[in-house]
Amino acid sequence: MKRCIVIGKTNVGKTLFVLQFAAYLGADRLEITFEEPGGEKRTETLSVDQAIRQLSSQEPHQTRCLQSIRLELPVGKGVKRFDVVDTSGLIEGIHGDVKVRKAMAQTLAAVRDADLILHLVDAAKAGERGVLQAVGDVDYQVAQFAQMRDAYAILANKVDLPNADVGVEKIRQEFSGHVIIPISALHRRGFKEVKRFVWRWI
Ligand SMILES: Nc1nc2c(ncn2[C@@H]2O[C@H](COP(=O)(O)OP(=O)(O)OP(=O)(O)O)[C@@H](O)[C@H]2O)c(=O)[nH]1
Ligand SMILES: [Mg+2]
Image (cartoon, rainbow, N blue to C red; front, side):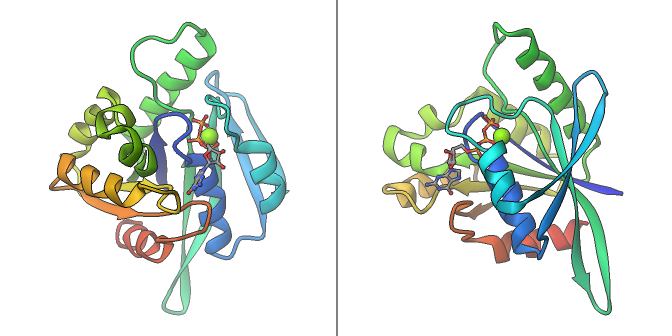
């Protein structure tokens, strides 16, 4: 099964994006597989609203393991199936909590095996505080790693917030040469472009 991984720093909106994108592609009840850094797996079925309430939060490091949802994209008379994988947030340096460190190692291993990488950054923060406050070394490292592969896009999220337009422009300058799609995970904006991009590589 092809895997589309969603990565980025903590709190950029990865979880909200994954759940809203699943809903946008027509999923109604979401069967979510949680895979702990130690390898244990469990599955929970939630409505989109329940999942958003339980899994996305304004507190950083909400997601601490891989969370996959199987999705379908229509192709001609059939469908393409793939897994979209939400991950725990990337951090700069070495985190004090061993659980966060293990989750980060799990994320990086999953990136290596992914067929498609969607890298979220916070465009509103980039507009408000400057791109270097919003985007860290870890983002540059991901972009550099992904340069070798075509199936990689940067999603500039939170464009519903003030100053995000300025942030998107800064992100475009900083990451020129990469595919950049402005989105709002909250309002499902830019999702048509994301769907088209995913469809090309899945
Ligand atoms: N206004 C606005 N808020 C957003 C958007 N996307 C996410 N948020 C908010 O940003 C916060 C973080 O969202 P999450 O989806 O939990 O972020 P995450 O990247 O999964 O964070 P971790 O799991 O902690 O790494 C929540 O309060 C969301 O409601 C967006 O497009 N617009
Ligand atoms: Mg999350």
